[in-house]
Image (cartoon, rainbow, N blue to C red):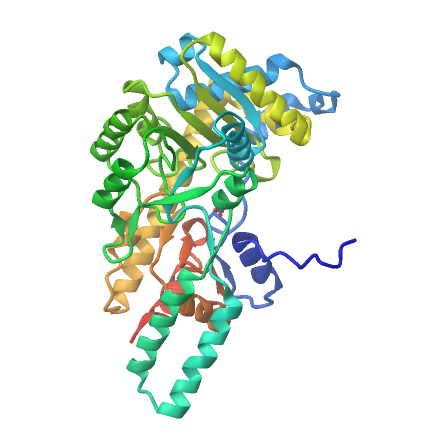
Length: 445
Ligand code: LMR
């Protein structure tokens, strides 16, 4: 029955964690998964979560949670996205459902899109969460470089040129995951829009706007509203306004994947600014929310999908359709995480404790950006590292090539995804010097 089944390629992010765990070195550093860690590199249980745990003790043994608990969780989640005083909230115009974290919310939306717009496409930013550079063929390219070295006696500089040419080839032959897989499995064809310019290490806004203008009217676009994964590059407020305006002109549908609310600025409302701009311009919007990082509930898979509607009647119809999709996929979600989130968001003291803790996490990451950049500059690196502090949120899109990433793992026991994405949460006071030295070593010419 199953002889024809070949093993699937490793997930690019989980694969990094596996390689890290298998490495016995005491110096090893995991900069792969984008989940928060404290300054000792340990996963964190937020104080608001501990207090919510104490409050709900025992209730998770109920066979299922009451509809009012999950309704409350969804209502509070929707307020976080659109604003607690927004008309959308007051008029009940959002079709919100609990989802299995951000991934589950995206998957539900993709399925909903296929059912009700079967001919549509989805536009992703290039890059988006996430891309895997195929290491086996990269190994082959390294062998090829060594061959050139022996046969043609290339100088070190020439070899570097060869390597970077191969790296470019490699990036073009990458395997795509996460957003790509989610919509592919829902049979929605994907397209990409320009987003990141590797030369300036910033947003290619002109090209992005051209792609929005050139897309067929009424296209679906996915945006990261803040703390873009993997680049850490977000449009400015003014640029979001221009994007929103152009969306009105073209009648496009914006779907926001908000996995890192609070991590860009330390302020939950500010990080929802892009969505609020689209709201002011009266767009109908879709949004996936995750509490995996902002509440440190990665293992609990708690999230929310919301779709804005013209009125509460449409919202009820859309909600019932999404609930039907979820029922056929996984029945109902586990209750414990939903209870935790609902308890935190509906208790003013716990909510304000959470808001403070989000700021503490965002500030620690920001400080580590500064220290890493300063250390590289102190080492006399001839490269420009300004982007480490210009980029926002959990990730630094370092610009390291797959070859350099490979060297960091093999020679220094430092693990990150092959696209050079550094999860800044993994950078600590204890490892930042070692990390800067290693990066300097693999990037010096
Ligand atoms: C990441 O990009 O590292 C996070 O979103 C975690 C995940 O599940 O991929």
